[in-house]
Image 1 (cartoon, rainbow, N blue to C red):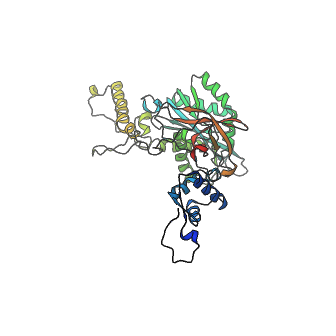
Image 2 (image 1 turned 90 degrees about the horizontal axis):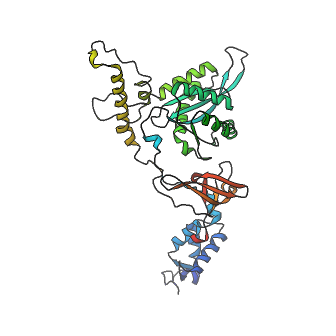
Image 3 (image 1 turned 135 degrees about the vertical axis):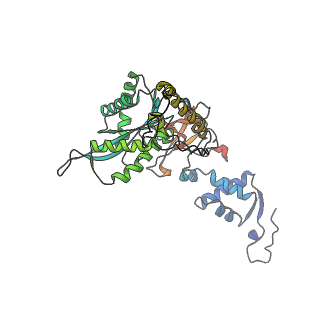
Length: 402
């Protein structure tokens, strides 16, 4: 069967004026499209369809051309599209009222160049920023760490505990992100993972490491580092401070970050003060002026304990009614992706290499979350089994997709 068409008066060949009529569901048509796709050096769907129509007219050919390009392993490897599953439910550490920093996340930034003293002839060394952020109220605590060693980090953790109290849970990434200048931080966290866990276990703290190359699993700390760098880059520039000066600067940046509103102001005209992380630390924003003394108030109505308890309950009530409701919505990753199958062929994303050079492996195990949706998988490669999050996994088409 051939197409009648309207090109009889043209000088084209007979096959072009009356191309053969084929169905896109037939196996022969699929093989013809695959052969032409390879002959045209993996052409795009539009070019592939135009070349096929020189001699063959396919019913539903546009869909078949797109499907042929989509199921091509070479084209899929060159694109390197990774998976993005639906955003998970919030953990209990984000929703249950508790004291600040009862559950916190940790991240590092730097290095920052410091001097051993003022004046000429000073020696320049490195210094790092260690950030602790409360998972409930977004309270931030910044510590200056003189070196990347287990002892220096433990001392910073002890200073944090002495000022903010002992946390129940500490979340940290695996130190394998690709932030510029963070290679030493990555190696430190990678080599001291077991030592840090042992110290935390002795102190009664549960230390949780997120999967490798998955900064979205520690997004609160990553956002806190970004906010801290926003102020530090504009203040520091190329200036080299001493360790004491840099620690003081970290404290000022910490106070500024703890004075940011947690949620927009309510529409009430009587609400002049937004809820900030500083309210849960000292009862007011850290950068605001102290409240006026209540000399003229009735002392019978200002019992100190009950007044402080009333203020504390007021802030926690505002947190539960204003801030927690803002967490209900998923701002991204709203659609659920299909689950990976055991034995499925995938690529492992590596930002330092081109997609065609990414390592190939097969899914050996899935790790579902509390909602039953897997977001981490074990990949069996030629070098062993490695664990990666879905944002580092690129699925390849199989014979079932054809």
